[in-house]
Image (cartoon, rainbow, N blue to C red; front, side, top):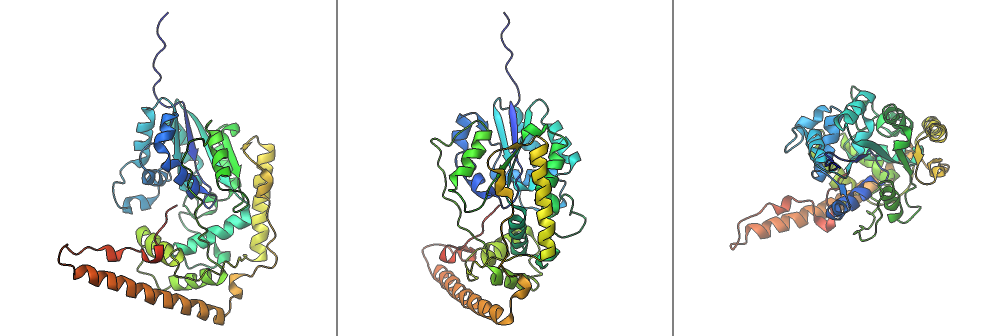
Length: 374
């Protein structure tokens, strides 16, 4: 009997494509923290974490890829090349993959020829997801009102902010046009309704793994802004025209103003207009019909995708000037405290003769503040 030929290339490739604001950062934190352990169990996360972000830009032919710092040459192909050298399973994860067009999905699957390709989609109720997405858009420098989201433009069809990036029905339609529906795995979730490791266990279960022996991080603190704070930030963005790069927006607008503790934390929830809510409910119902009728693999409780009650919440247009002034006043006081702390640190470093001056005073690190990714 002749020997069994050595397998080349991965057995299965799992693409976790989002949706954004559905626990993706928590899942990615857990996966990357346990990269070596997962490798020992047969699952490869190729490359480095940032390479997966860049790969999602290459797949979607995003012109912004060339403007990103560092090595941006062929990140997707780099991941594919490493995967081809691995005989087990492979996982690639970034929420920006979600908006890929049908043709882009076809090319992804063709690049992975020989492997069994699966897609994992974490999802949540459409109205809540929409509100989180608009807030994230504002935290990344946007100036548009909530009912003007998502933005129109040449990148609306495959960009990271358009409907195809977070409308579950569109994502299922596109990825399901190329892959067998039983290989499209949808994991419903409801933020705050369960302990954080439960979503991770379901996620790992799709991969045939469990969380035994893994270092599971604590859930990230809820960095959501309340109604008045997000409306104030939206108006401030109109005066930040010089913050054009993704790095500037992510570090200073999102990381510092949006999530760095500069703004108060009222946590007041809000809603879009009644017309927008009706559209969102209809989009959610379409996705739920697809899950019931078209053979997609639902991993968890599909009723978590049903919209909650938004009655009693205010619309951002209902914020009055007195509320805005109070929020802005508190933010200015915190900004002044930060400037004083950073100036003292800079002065202390410049006066220390035993070591050369450093630029650590440029870091956004006051009271534990700092940029977050994903």
